[in-house]
Length: 197
Image (cartoon, rainbow, N blue to C red; front, side, top):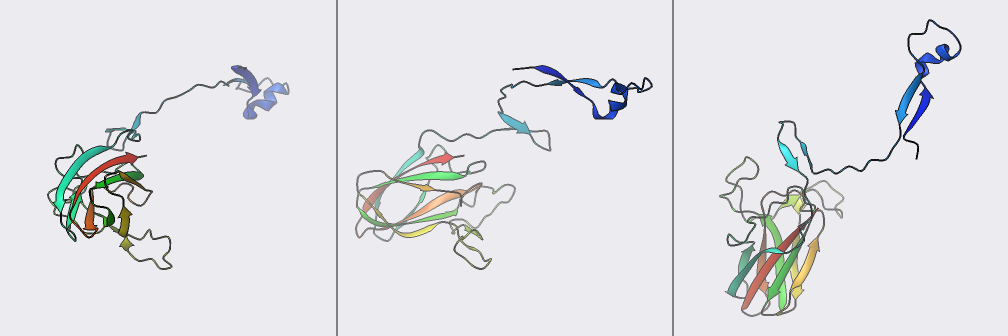
């Protein structure tokens, strides 16, 4: 590979033609080489360093809600989790894992996080309500609709049921999931999460 070569500067072709009064040398060095770079972040408009996000490699924020009655709901993740509430800033997708002790239907709804946390610089958010957006790809009108609501997902008992939610929850700053036990009987419900760039 040639690292340096000479090329004619477009403004000085007259010099090459023999006009000695040209003030710019027409031979300029053009470096041509491949150099790997590594981006670990950037400096924002305020001069603050922002690291580049990467996908999480392990599930986190494990929690177990015990003896949840049929028709009752839980919010996950909980305060006992390692990341609570979920902050999707810089993340596009998320895996949600649910392990019930009673198989059957469960409703899963992406909701606003708790009121005592700030959404950016706003406090007193409308907690535990469905997140809404105009991102519904099936809609022919520009209206707000729930971002993610699954009213009857059939879950298998005593194993991790893992689901990926792509795109819709990207950059949501206060995220929790409301899970409703509609299995027909009492159930323990374990949950875990993994965010992806």
